[in-house]
Image 1 (cartoon, rainbow, N blue to C red):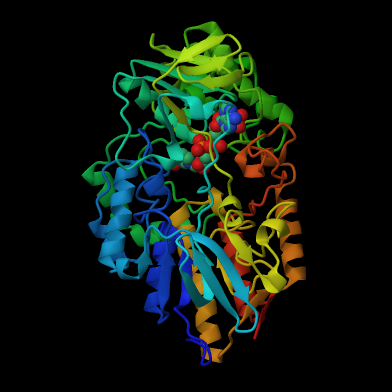
Image 2 (image 1 turned 90 degrees about the horizontal axis):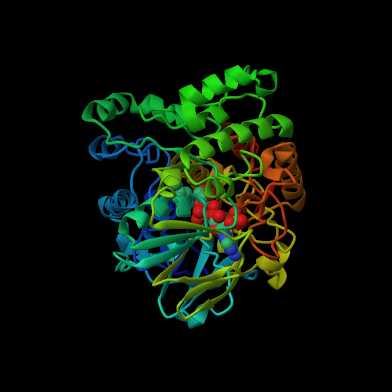
Length: 541
Ligand code: N01
């Protein structure tokens, strides 16, 4: 491909060398496109490069949280645990970069400042943070759904004499933690994973909590050779199941992840004795077995009360236990898997500051001053999450037709057709964008399906000599309405739900839920239908 009258630096510029970017490069290069990947980090891996905090690991079985495109890779790669740690996944992604000779087309330490569509030539012009320019016909935004870090701007933070770090920007050289007085802010997946590990290292650990977490024991353990061999022997079947399932899962490994809800078992019809028996048998997981909690707030509250009961039974100090009890719907925030989270609060050198009762006043050189007093610290860690789903794109100056700015077009919330493209931004394709199943599905299979779809589109355009693909505004509007409708009644949009899923974790961000709840199977069926109907909803020319 390539234009006859302009010089292109690449057919396709891919932004990001995480899982999506690496796979996009592999596939598009194999299909004959000249691809250049621009990556802000000094290494490949995306999320698995940046989030290298103690305790970072995946909470999806390793044998499923991996690519299925190469049966030899699947057979050769050995996972050591049911839930792989960050270093292991980072090694896996580096292995992929080497195995398929991807590095020669990846420019590291190359952040993208702006991407501007040139209407005269149907091309994108990129400006990097170093001021270089590149031009390509297409761009694939492989920028990730949870990659734009968020850190609250606490007053006085710049006066702190110790070390300030974010879990999502953890330095490669590590952070001195042993024997230190550590404070950590945030109790989402990152904080909950880090807290037990930090407690092992710290002289003293203070957890600053605004909202208590729903988290379940992960029961992670080493993966035995037999368990691994069993899945590898039927990997094609496992992958087929993942590709065809709503969340790209196949429930393979022996680790007990969750006890899944039984649609016929209703908590509203249960007796106290039944609930007690469930607690005795399943512990924290007893809150998740009921079929009526996903869309009924009364049923949901009963399940939350079961969860709270487990917190009270686990955490010895009743006041700390009460602070750790969630008071919002189960299923609103992402479920977390932990390794001894609640038990950590029974340790003598671990304190909880409940920010709802004792808010932060300011950071001072010695530590954090709350209304009740000074917490002296050597290290202050923010595990305060991300400007999710849209943040990685709105932080780049993306200009489409007529100079319109994506950040402004999305001021009321991100809008995209199938999460793949945005009206007014021709030739820009997004991997796992707003309106796809995105962050709810297991990433590698979701990425394989979506990048496969994008590469088919680009091949068809090349075959027909087409240079522009653009989303029709009506198709985008209809899809966004469908996404909104699918979310109605779910806990993600419950008025009491405050989470990154609906944007309410970021001050000033509109509250919308740009994730498709219809499932990956239905999403991909729709994507295939679109392709079959000559890319209905897109204008190709
Ligand atoms: O971020 P979060 P995360 N003052 O937004 C608190 C994936 N992930 O990085 O709830 C005080 O969940 C905030 O409090 P509140 C996974 O999809 C996966 O932990 O907003 N506190 C919350 O407690 C996950 O869901 C894995 O009131 C403040 C925390 O910071 C997603 O990434 C591991 C605050 C942020 O929690 C994000 O997880 C890690 C403030 N001003 C991440 N601002 C696995 O695979 C925010 N907080 C296991």
